[in-house]
Length: 466
Image (cartoon, rainbow, N blue to C red; front, side):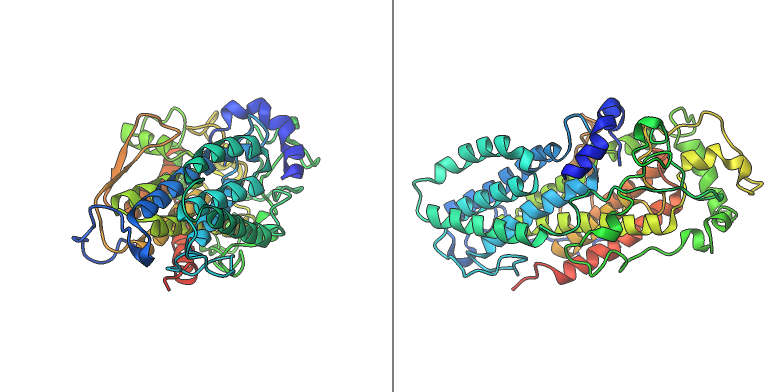
């Protein structure tokens, strides 16, 4: 990501404190036979080794999250589509390592021979260490310190050496597969906004000289991401392209529709920093879901894994599928965003006097609840798509309606929200983008649908049970 650092790092640090926001129902009947402890005998793995493997999966997953800030310069915001790649690579490495011992699910990258005598916990930790360092080289020092402490208890256990070797092999396989996936440049490229009503405009502060890296008047993030990157599972970033905004032939026509007018009026009174019409509950929802989707949905996946008492194999698979879904949904969504280039509410509200729609009026000084608006087009919402993908994957991987789960948020510390179904969390996540002022409702609902389509496809085509 060196080129991305050079382009963005100079000015991002200046506004880093302000950039915290950059960027179907569960089926079946309620499960009544949830085990009281994780499954620990699959494939003949002894209880102690199985429990250690599960702990290694959780420990490694937590360290991947801790290592993610190393993907960008100190103080700069971490784009969610870059974050998702790290988590997907680390999770796949762990999944493949475990299934190289007991092959319960299809492996993704590693096709080497099974190593049935390998210590699963050691294999997971070694896979995570190499995958994290390979995907985030700047995290080397912290990761090696973490790994030294985590792996030490295994050093005298049976299968230690073969476990480490298997984990290293699994990490090497996924890193080699993703070495030329088109992400190295960060998707950053010159972008010139349109001038018609409905066309995306650079948003403040990304329309200031400090962000005019290419001489086009401002900065639009990841404008080439959807065109350049290779997804993990979907066949192409255009496979699930969203339909045209508001079903119109052009952006200028879209802003004349009755649905757009309704969405405009809604976000203008619910999404601003000082909007009195937004309830306290809506404000909480808006701020709770502001954090990056790969982080938030990783937290949901861990809560579901705990509630369902998953063993290491099931938990690693769930985490891998969810993060594959996060990456592929962002890649797909960004392709759609820059295919349509639809403007953000903050631009629409400022320029409403010239949009040709007599039912919309500009509002001077209007600004979003959580500044700033992420520097990418409105339609469809990537945040909603990421939630839809994660929810659809979890619904497929975890059948039935289990116990309610509770989660916290890095952007609203101390608040806990509880959900009966992941679909409910995904819907709330999508609507939060209206309440925070980043998206029109149409962008949120279409993004959610797009994400769910992607998630169902991934669940049906990756890491399948053997």
